[in-house]
Length: 86
Figure 1 (tube, helix red, strand yellow):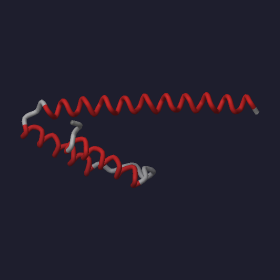
Figure 2 (cartoon, one colour):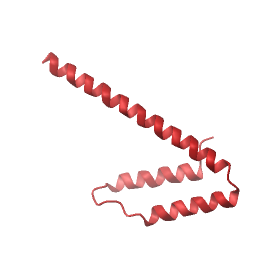
Figure 3 (cartoon, helix red, strand yellow):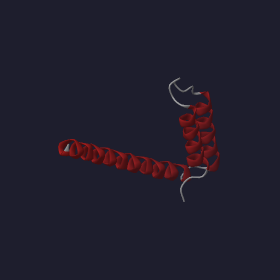
Figure 4 (tube, one colour):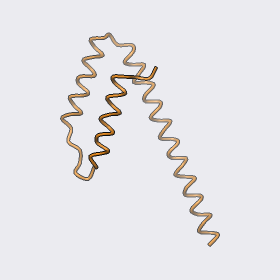
């Protein structure tokens, strides 16, 4: 029983480490996108945002992807493009 608990704790620690790594990757990408948007002229920035939003609206998610996940993605992209980090 102790071995099972120890194995579960090790697996949990590994998953937590993977989760932290993904959070860091997402934050790094947010910083890069924000910096890129800030260095663009307003017209270029708007054109890029429009292109991304158009591509997103035309994309059809796989049937097994829950609607909630798709909506979260749309909301996050909109937030990132329209209200980038300060």
